[in-house]
Amino acid sequence: MTKVRVLMVCMGNICRSPMAEGVLRKAIQDAGLEQIVEADSAGTHAYHIGSPPDLRAQQAISRRGVDISQLRGRKVEDVDFEAFDYILVMDSDNYSKLIRRAPAQHHGKIRRLLSFSRKYPNLDVVDPYYGGPQGFEENLDMIEDAVRGLIREITGDTQAKAT
Image 1 (cartoon, helix red, strand yellow):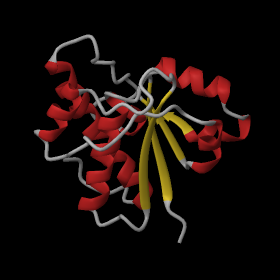
Image 2: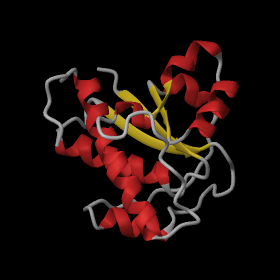
Image 3: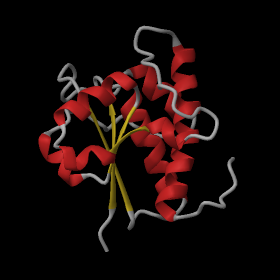
Image 4: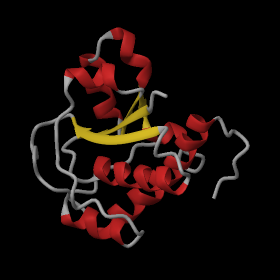
């Protein structure tokens, strides 16, 4: 069986997208979907290639029972457009960058993460990098809600209760 591959994307791949990858990995594990769904993350810029996630992101997500300390920043590569089924961006700026870059046949894969959210539909997950710890917590609330919606879509469980 071919896995559904999901790529989470933000600008530098050290705050939002690694948190989204971590939340998705936990949701995959909790739902017993390890054989069905695979998660990764990347950035649209090469600022932090090889760097671990921002310490504030690690601390915030750790309080929710997820460890992302082993993740390392990478930049979106052209092969990602073919390799992934979902390419989920955190904001409209990164969405525009990927749409301009991707071959037209892959545009349908590129969506905002929050398009899966019931509480925060079609909003941006704002970059918390220059803010305080509360921004990371707010990001995680949004990401968790959207990941629940993503899992519902992947599994076809449209009747799943929002938690």
